[in-house]
Length: 123
Image (tube, rainbow, N blue to C red; front, side, top):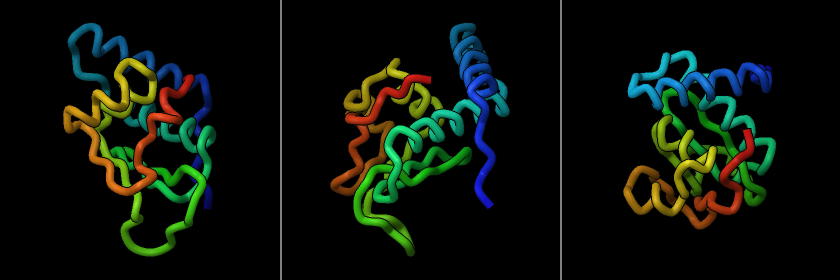
């Protein structure tokens, strides 16, 4: 059964709520954070469909993207993992991929694990 798509209005509302909380120096609501992360992962999947790179944002979600060899079992050869705050920053363009990667906030392994060509997204 395919996962339910997040409506653009709901995704943008959650993203706005996370941004407002951050601007106020507050911790965002977990439901807003989860929806914002999943919405941005959904946009990445739409922009760069494929199965060669797995992008993980624990505990909220993961998606396989980027055209290339399909992985079917075990840990994929190209994995990107980061926390929710970093994912929102790099996917919306408030932080550059290279800066977040250089600071160690992104764990990326594999020859296709650099997402700088497909980020930022336009939520």
